[in-house]
Length: 338
Image (cartoon, rainbow, N blue to C red; front, top):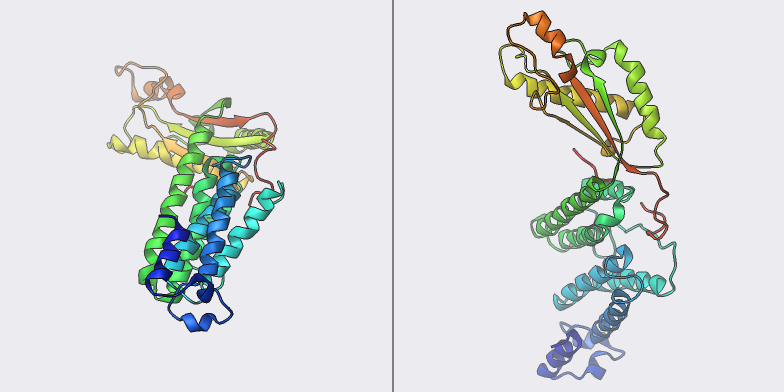
């Protein structure tokens, strides 16, 4: 049964005609859903369906958001809430659909954090969404973000209407959608070609067995930062720390930790030079990927010298040298990584 038929059938059961229910005295039908709202939702859903199978397509950010606004409005309509949230949600959908039907290329990316009948919740998630909207690969996760935004507003409605207990599940769903978006964006980044692979000797950057950058590190890392800034469409900077097999402090796991700390030190330096933190992924592989092997019969100092090539930091630059896709939504407002 369609949503429209559902409403009309409901009115028939209670003995009220649609004409009466939609008349000039809605106060006479207290407790009965207003059919004019249902008719409006139904008409907008048909318009959204045409766009879904038309030019904007199923993956369009604005169309996804409009369809979710209608889903939310319909759900709350059957809850028979009366604080103005349903008409406000319908208005959001109607505005987006009208602009899509005009093939406008500058539709705003902004989403109100609250509308009539709701309050703002989880500003941390709103900040994360705002950051992701700036990512070069935003289009890969745009559907999930559009849905997450509307669900956050819905959570705000549930909190305003009752309590955070009811709102929490909606906010949690929005958080899950954001995580899905980050995964999709990162998958797209991983598929970007490697522009350059740079390997720096750890001996040039750190003292032996240490993770704090030394003065000698400033020049080579400064050149790396300048090189990164010249990339027109940077996808990701992957930093991978490596150590030799020699044990630090008698603990084999120390090498793994040291490789991670060194990669993190390079990351912090690049952030300080203006490279966006969300573009940088730092990790360590310890001594698991040696470039050379050296005899254990050598003295420790000889082994340290021999194993020098294994102590290194790889810097992998991923991105694209061509210009960004001009077909993506205009005025985008990256994946963040904690």
